[in-house]
Image (cartoon, rainbow, N blue to C red; front, side):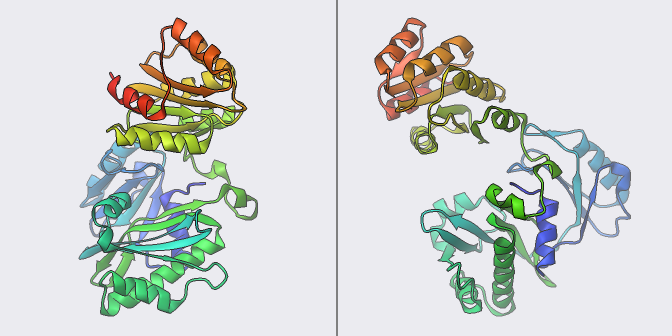
Length: 365
């Protein structure tokens, strides 16, 4: 479960991490006296809120009320703004990143630090890998002080900031462990005249651990209508930033499809896993969900039929009649029948995954 920023900030503060002074509002008139510049942050759990106009600044209370009115009237990437976090604007000298992610391959948390804070961490990993440091954490022993210090030193921090970063990392790990997190990050963690300060907070809790945590999914409207619909249909769906919708039976196959589309210069718009044994209705539901997203230019269905039968998937596609250009890669159980049905209906059917990905990029309109 993805927590809202204000919830994550409360967790961090409870663990002793320095967090910007802040308060939550649900109406513009709830803005308090503004003695120093403030930042108003829409509480919708989507990435790149700033670029979408979801983060605004104000110098005085009058301007803050006006900006709050503007934010409450916005729809940020499919989500309505119902709450705004108002925080004091920090005097920033440098921006850093510190985060913890669950490493599935190594079956343990991994601590990540970089001096390139305030930007997309994936971009840092791609463009400046030398400026990023990682350390796998033994879940039995936890994160030791010397380990955190060594990692902070490896990215070039010195003196007071070195020790403060190590302390923040240890406290972040305690929160990560206490609340069964899958992801905990501060981006950016900024240096100010008074020391390091968290001015953003991200925290995701493992859904499988919610039974022992005091968070309910209903506490925060963190999902889009598409994600809600997928949950109702029992499908796994994740919104992404691109314009090519990707559907397949099995998370691994869908992930491989995302990579293949990206390899040919495309940008995936979503991840939708039909699951094993999907039928015509599941396929129609999947197409209904991806068709709800604005900006879709093509749809790529990568179907491998094991327990999933290709002819049933084909029937769902034909019944739904997607409006956007659609390419289907089909292989496996009842493959020939499925292909025949689709080709008779005028659909673009290919044999290879990369061929399908390339075609999905080419047919965008």
